[in-house]
Length: 216
Image (tube, rainbow, N blue to C red; front, side, top):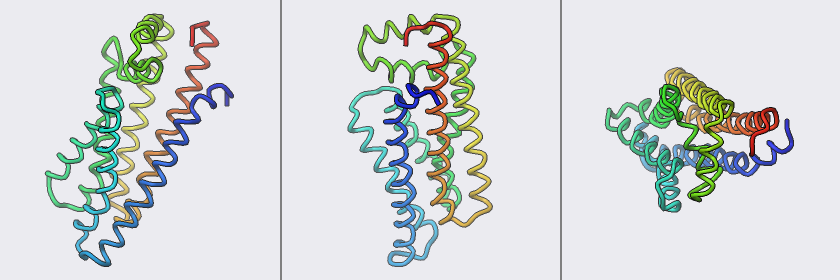
């Protein structure tokens, strides 16, 4: 692995790894505590178990205090989760509701390939330049380079395929494995997919910069 790319992605990977551990351990613990002390109902236990991810998403949204691609992603995740829950009280639907968003995000990535600026253009601009006007202008200027434009298309396509694939696998697991097991392994699935995508994206960007002589 390119050392520069690895160093650049390390803070994001560590943050994602911590989220995976918390999202796997806390909801699973809440599930078993609920089944033992609150209610034997599967729906009630899963509702309590999925409270932590929902509350964390709201807290992340409030902490960022601005409408950027990351905040918008969190907000859409909450909306999609609530919509999925309203579809019915099936326990499997509660397990699928977070996967619905990852699948929708992947589909949006693939659909955006038909536009001049694919979805990952906006994420890349935010992570590289934030809200700095000069930085955003410089990023947009680099993105007009044909090689950079093709690179953004490829990155968007890879993220889209990975997230749609993760959604399909998780749906299969929901209908074939016990609920506690799905609750435990789901965060590792989406976390692993996201970490791999982040590392690959940083490596690919570095390779593109070095091969094409683009400004990093």
